[in-house]
Image 1 (spheres, rainbow, N blue to C red):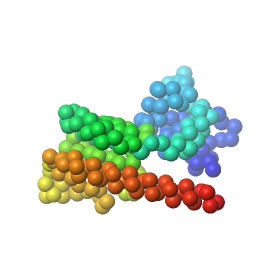
Image 2: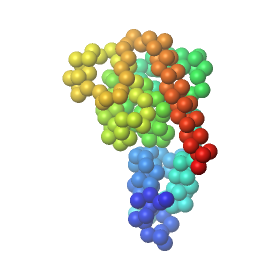
Image 3: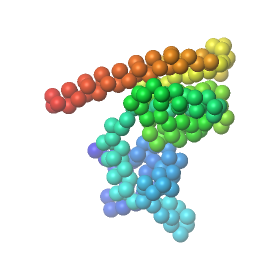
Length: 208
């Protein structure tokens, strides 16, 4: 089924704007621009400086994204690079079947999530550019509260978090200094739930 945006583009058109491509693919404008720069979308600029993208490349990328179940993804957003390295090293050491990515602030985190939705987002709150609370609110508005798991790891008190507007329902909170045993247990539980969900979906498909 064609997206609503794609249906609005004339049938005889073979190109679209970057904004149209972003809407078709369900990503931010910046993410679509990055995919053009990386060559994932075929595009060129008009004499007036406007970017035009081939519809067939947009449709091909949309089909590819729809057909990818992909690995179990974990995104860690933390501006303390030493702590970020510790996260990555510890998760790798656990040997879980996950793909781990990282970002240094909320803005970079939003871009990474626009490219590939994680199964779990682990984030700090105090960060430059866009802080963790702003990032979570943006994600909650765009994807809802049940698209992926969110874990906030912070040294802020409950009163300080509340003073900033609080966290949406469903967000897990862990305190700094972080207990990596606590995080390990959380990841194990999420992986178990994902495995059970995948098994149910496989049974449903087989029964159709």
